[in-house]
Length: 518
RNA sequence: CGGAGUGUGGCUCAGUCUGGUAGAGCACCGCGUUCGGGACGCGGGGGUCGCAGGUUCAAAUCCUGCCACUCCGACCA
Image (cartoon, rainbow, N blue to C red; front, side):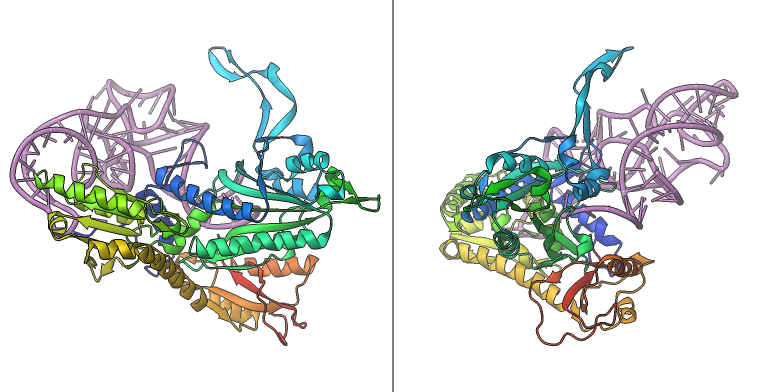
């Protein structure tokens, strides 16, 4: 009997996609809603994915010269007030600590009115201000620059609506913060981080992205330039998967981050910040998941090869288990993606069919079934999660044990590559180029109302004159009527004459991506 | 914060209109038969029906107030 997920992601009905997403997160046992509004409990399988993301990314961040630090969770309110745009951007979604003690009053435990803090503390929504404060103390001379630091932390943004991994009131992330002597270096740093994210996303998450600069109205509050990587989900919507900001000297001026140059005069630092979060996990689900659940790229699978022994409470069980133990040990001695292979012999006392499907739902890249026949013949039965079904049947193949072990690393790499290729083909195939007028754009994406009835739409690449200020706001408002947003101006720009701007009719200066977004 | 909807065992829900003292499927536990393609039979545990008032002989059901959650908007890694 087939159960699958009971919710398909592809029925032509977009409204099922969010349900499918939630079903995958639940059935793959990654996370669950918590008693705290908008905050999730990340379960071992989901957290295991995050740890692997952290490990790989951390290595890359350190390899580019950054060092890890840790700054306080609480930020004095006055710090935030220093950068005007920054405050305005975050003020509406802040958790604030105003008291430091509880008291039982009339039999009820409540906030002690006598324990009010002199200055309220905010729970960090991001750490530019408190790190900037440290920078102002750390930096005295041009010899101190650049300062290149990163922190792994949790942050809180009091969002109105939340979704597991994609938008939670508390989330985990990495935030890089750097200070430089001049704009050129800081801009280069911003692009270095962007490229690091692009490469990481594609190689490790097998999630193709388009890197580029955000239009002025989508910038991080207080930033001079904001860049993003954008990934296409299986419903055709865009997910901002990472951002990198060139902050100019705005934060430095607001926080007095100055240094003496080699000529003895004073200059403000040029700063940057960049981050990716647990949202990446949501992106992986919506990029690679299918109707049987999650499919994990092997590089971030907490268990890459799971051995399911076919146990039947009979004497030959011992033999099967011994065979499995030895195999797991041998596989764990191999290296894939630069680290030891993560293989597991699943000895849980569950029916083997049930165990197999649990691992299918969790997205384990390779599942090996091991029964008495395999033990006797010195073989393994291989199921690949990226190529699970042959029609309605599960596709499995018996392979000699040595052959499998010898090719296991290559198979993991192949799965990694095939997941990427599949997602890349979807992105390339759904990135439509050449729409020239707003009406054509509207016709292509369909009406914003009755969104549920919408078929899959990809992204449109159009050209524009990069309007600013009020003119840009008008463009944004027009797009909003179609629930469309400008994602970014891809770093990889077409050459030659671009033609005329879709919005203003003036000569176009760059290509931009337009899409519905998360 | 605006609009709509929903709160009943762990999950999905029926029962509410028409008041009579709580059900199904899945999950869980036990026993048996099974086990290489998402098992079956028998037995069992688990719910003050979101909360607080009210009406009534009697409330999951009717009335009032509150709370929470979901979806759609505005906001966002």
